[in-house]
Length: 437
Ligand SMILES: Nc1nc2c(c(=O)[nH]1)N[C@H]1C(S)=C(S)[C@@H](COP(=O)(O)O)O[C@H]1N2
Ligand SMILES: [Mo]
Image (tube, helix red, strand yellow):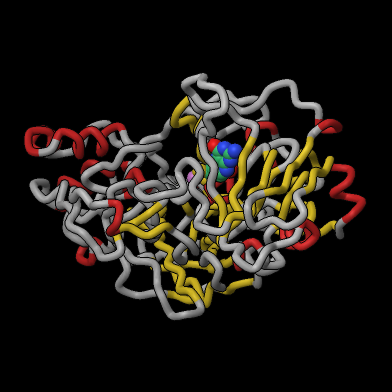
């Protein structure tokens, strides 16, 4: 099902080499693209390239790159992380293919890795200390992990983490940073204490505005005392009952790459607010000013801009709750399916601080949408599971598209949404390819 040649590719190369490269080598094809890359090649050529007919070809949006053209990347060899796709090896950044995210609760080995620096080495969890301080903290304190455990109530919650740059690979023109496709998201279960219990114990002054974190990872440059990243959340988010300081993931130690032995988890916001290898929390009387806290990091233009624009920092806002999104985790894109049988299609959906209202799927390029059955999430800020059965009318090439709508009525877009300089918040619909035979 993976064609070796794409008709018209030479012309595409001529006009837009970056796009052509993506088409051939990239994995940038899970959402629709605004550009008509294939406009020179007719539908006949497209069917030839796919090696099969396209029953709903008449509904195919102009310029759609078939999901079947998504190239396979070789999985990386990262200890304890079988099957992840490596995007960068220094610092390590690796994403999870959609079909490996099929579990209701993401196993430790499938939690994506997004490192801004180099993780600490030779960690002794028994000696690990968390400091809480800052100008708006009235009772600065230190805790070992055993003390956190003894002093505060232990809670376990399933919490969804998604990197703000997930889906970046689909923006045109390309934006710098890790070229995540769909796999910088997961929803493991975390155990620890509530951030708010710790903060309340340490005393928040009246003027407290923000909580910032510092981790034990080191800057890629090797410069000591330079934090690779130090972000945080406004007090209101920190005080939510789902915001945790966690030492366990799925009942096990947190994997080294994911923040062992202690991390913050503030779900529904960009993953970057959830500090790993957590050493220090600072209660601030202003928006925290740590590394990668201010625009343009993890920020988007306040008003939409033309693709490729330069945007002054003052015209950007820091990303907070993430937009509604979904994934098809079963079947794996590219399968062949026996036409005589229904195909079970399933996945997850999530909506930042909100709930998902509904998930729909389409097998005719978005002309008709079928409802799916949804199960509630395990708790607030956990992803929600959906499932449907589809029947294909005749043999040929199909795409299954999934589209979630949040409880405010906001839908995922079909096409890549507002371009922004750093390539954040692409919540376009996920598509998979199915050959009915
Ligand atoms: N100390 C520290 N915390 C960090 C990071 C980091 O590089 N260092 N990366 C952040 C980013 S950008 C994301 S998306 C999440 C990723 O968490 P994961 O690697 O466990 O999936 O951790 C966040 N916390
Ligand atoms: Mo991130």
